[in-house]
Image (cartoon, rainbow, N blue to C red; front, side, top):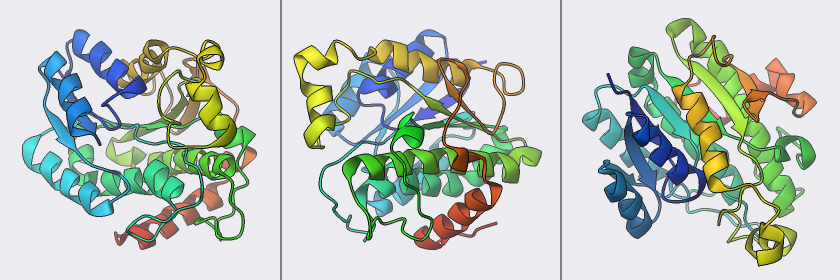
Length: 276
């Protein structure tokens, strides 16, 4: 029986590639994106349902969660894949630093609002993280909005580390209720995810010569699809971080259970949901 797999950030890049691969594997894919034109195009090519949400606006995330709850009696996999790296420090309409909100806080909120459905379904929650969590993060639990220290690379690395910390804490809190969680690095992907950034990030992902050194979206998408198709506890272990379909090293802070708990509690407070 096909499973229902919700993929955010699926209008292009590895999200769109994974959606195609999972559809070809016989699964029911729900395509979520920010751009109506691109999201519709991906979904219609698959004959799949689609929904819109800009993760820079948390009210859109709340509306998305309500629609998903009303529309899908089961959600077997939730892939929190939406994200990006940006340029100068800016605040969203919700008052949060944009990189932190789009990459972590919005996915945290969506997962919390779908919590009961995920428990009922015995779901897997997949977080698209990055090797940047180890390479660029300077994580400060008391400066999540990067008010004291900001560069686009540091903000992105911190957000990707937050993805891993969220994964470990989600596995700890809901593992006993049938929910599994995993984070992964898709590779340095030749996609447009850094189109809004500046400097080296923008050059690396938009320069035709540099882009030849990057991994294709199909390969990156296959790493998401591998986790979505896999069986937790057999193919991969809940609460862990993967790269190239294998357990991988990341920041030493990712193994700090107190830090993971504090991030969860602070995130819950920021978006106005319970911290239990």
